[in-house]
Amino acid sequence: MFLPGIIPPNENEHPRLWMLVQNGRVLFSEKDSALAGEDEAEQLPFTGAEHFIGTLDGNLVWTAGIADETKPVDGWSFYDLFSVHGMTSEETWMAAGRAVQVIEWERTNRFCGRCGIANELVTGERALRCPQCHLLRFPQLSPAIITLVHRDDEVLLARSHRFPEGLYSALAGFVEPGETVEGALIREVKEEVGLQVKNLEYQSSQPWPFPNSLMLGFFAEYESGDIVLEEAEIAAADWFPVKALPNIPGSISIANRLITSWVARYNKS
Image 1: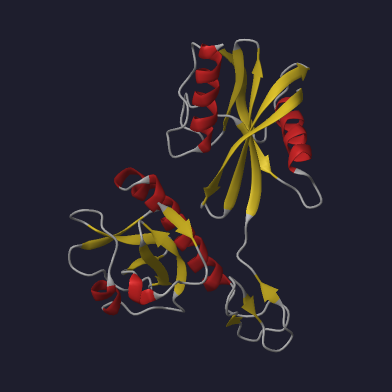
Image 2: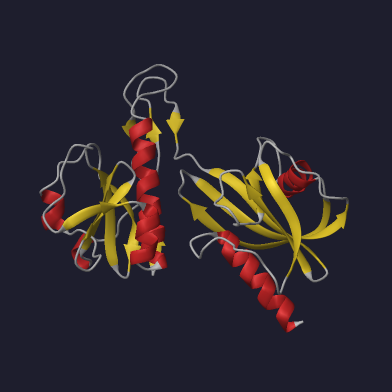
């Protein structure tokens, strides 16, 4: 189990593991996909501070950045997050995504955006503070909704221009400043496919570290309208029978969870 954290417990009671990050990739053993320990961490120079990110199966997990030009220890390699999902547990992947986001936040906020002075880490919270003007910088988090619209025995799926041919997914979009999550959902569905929806039902969430989204998954019932595509973003959209779905995203994505859970619910009804 991965339990996110900011302040580490007594280190003498737990082994320390490292998620060492280089250009968005995390160091793992080539042999058994194990995390780096103190021996590996001591051989690689850090580019910044050490950050505690939580406990994984009772082990303290820390992260630090590694310079792009640094070669990994023999028998170890840096893996991107898509690869990590296929070679480790879901909990380890969640921790790796957290590590990558924390290191990217540190890397891109070394200096104050208001006065240019070097930022300092704040003790006891995940924040950087300018020692001169006291501006705080927290890790960037971009909330986004992802919505499976349903109608009788059909669901609405769409594909963007960047999707592989034949792949369809649920509708998604970012929450705008000053907007509720529910308002964003209604707006995105209307903008992307021209439909009105009702009876919004929260399903689940997923941190999506590409680069820093928090996906909020919903079911929504079709209310009215005909499909009209926002062609700049949507290449195609259509209603698909629950029993005859097209190719959908893999298990790494909350879109898969939304679609498969709705199918399971429909089949039980």
